Image (cartoon, rainbow, N blue to C red; front, top):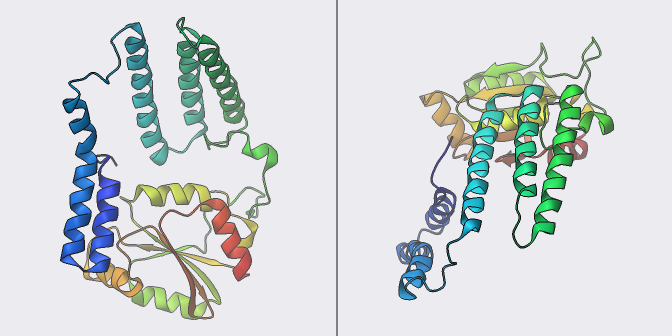
Length: 272
């Protein structure tokens, strides 16, 4: 769930190095990555701290701001696994605290901090209204007011799951389903994959109308087995998430990584 901030650039550098296959270029890339990380420390040390800002009351205010940001990180991690309107109320409380913190600044730039506090207060109000409407997306708390058509169940409620949805763990099971259905959407997922949970929430919680004719199959590779390794090998994947689009038994599109709602709907529209 959490890793050092260097993980993303290091992974990118290692991926590029493994793709190029040149030991010399790989050494140069990793050396420059390490040099870039250490350059600010070298600069501060060489100037003996002269370029550092002076201590003062503003540092206590900044310290409080970073504390609020750490709370926000905790809420972001919780929100990935706990999808509920309750989270909107928790976020509203956080934004109210931010609004009071920003409004309380009495130093220079008070007009700017008051504007920040006012914006935070307005957003907190939107979150409260969104929670009252039953929404669960903190980035779009009022989404239900301008909602686009979504796939409905027989009871008239937005579809979150379907009796025809299938979950498989082997290529043999997947191939059988692909052969029996003209349109199959394969969601390569795992229980430990946080991005998969986000996609489940954004793409399949309220399904777009374009999914009407598609058979959804969740290809679960939670366990590291010979079958899961074979799945990754066939589709040349490092791991989940990934979306595979089959039409008439043929793989017509493959999307790797976290996919947004707009891109997902555009892909379905193009294939339909």
